Image (cartoon, rainbow, N blue to C red):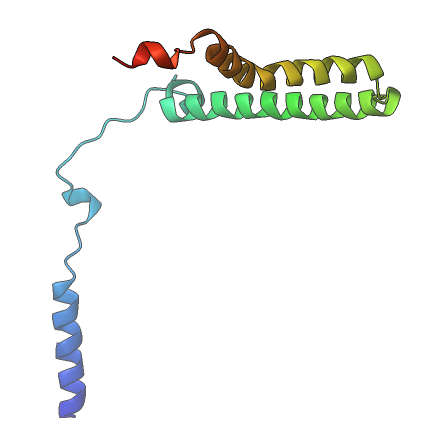
Length: 120
């Protein structure tokens, strides 16, 4: 019998520790929203989210169109080996690679000092 009474008093103490505030005891009085308030139009989060979704959808469509155009273009026209393009590219690369060695050779030729003029 004493164990039952101890359990009841313990349960009562735990209930008292959990203080609940009823809604009639709330200190704040919140007015209701306006009737014309629409969160889809007036909430900034919803507006930004909608704009972001539209941008993502537009990018997704552009990517899909780009990949479909690439597939069509590669299927329609295959890039063939062109000899004149190859020759032009080889000439350009050769010219660019030879700039530094040629400039060093020209410097050696035109700016050489005579050994006699260097000695006193």
